Length: 257
Ligand SMILES: CC(C)(COP(=O)(O)OP(=O)(O)OC[C@H]1O[C@@H](n2cnc3c(N)ncnc32)[C@H](O)[C@@H]1OP(=O)(O)O)[C@@H](O)C(=O)NCCC(=O)NCCS
Image 1 (cartoon, protein in one colour):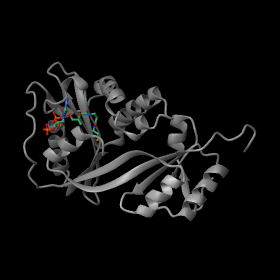
Image 2 (cartoon, protein in one colour; image 1 turned 45 degrees about the vertical axis):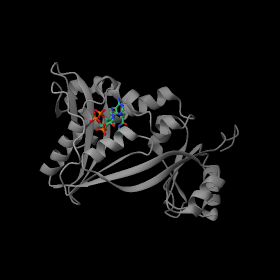
Image 3 (cartoon, protein in one colour; image 1 turned 180 degrees about the vertical axis):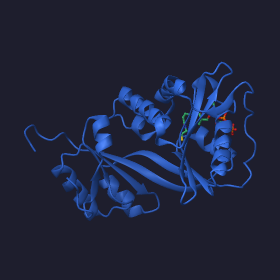
Image 4 (cartoon, protein in one colour; image 1 turned 135 degrees about the vertical axis):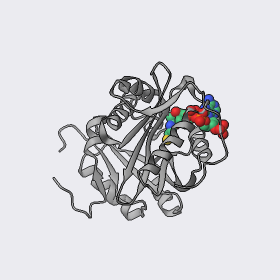
């Protein structure tokens, strides 16, 4: 069933299937008390269990309304940008010379999934304890697999001389707007703090340059100091800050439609 454009929320079939409960998202990034009440009514009549809301951070009425309507803050979303042609930022850690960066190969998949399961613990799905941890670990393993299997235009892998994958970074490109975006980035716990992340990001910036992109963006979490310093060291500047809220509704009564 397609919903009217005027509906206050949109149903998210992929998230619903993956997490096994009905999930929707508020349309737009502001919320008045009336819009909050409409979203509540819509969710109750559509049997929604979890409602996502990506809010502006600079509108006090929206923040107050979200909190009064029972939304819980689960992440601060920070967007960084870098114009291509700019020099990288102040040099960070030197990379361990034994690790090199190349494009992903089918044989990397199991190793990348293993890193992804434990890497993304600063994210909203880990922060929101309603989502069982093993399911969220699976979510990121599935995500990195789909990036390698064609959702991303390129996936860069940091590998040991023996070929073992120890980190990844996925690249998305809009060739019409000439805009690049970095998707998932993860480095195995055992090799963090040695410049592997920096090598991946700088290689990605080079790759976007070869694709004639004019700018690259990347999103991370407000509580992710390592990622923020990594992007700042690689010449990225902050562009935007938004707030991720989740609201949970009680399960619909048995027999209710
Ligand atoms: C963020 C991440 C990719 C950085 O990879 P990395 O290989 O450790 O990065 P680098 O060695 O190039 O270091 C980059 C910055 O990370 C920080 N950092 C990395 N490892 C750290 C550690 N063990 N302790 C403290 N800080 C650390 C450092 O502050 C460093 O900045 P500095 O140069 O100012 O010291 C890695 O920590 C990671 O995979 N984290 C989990 C997944 C994640 O957060 N992904 C990004 C989300 S968008």
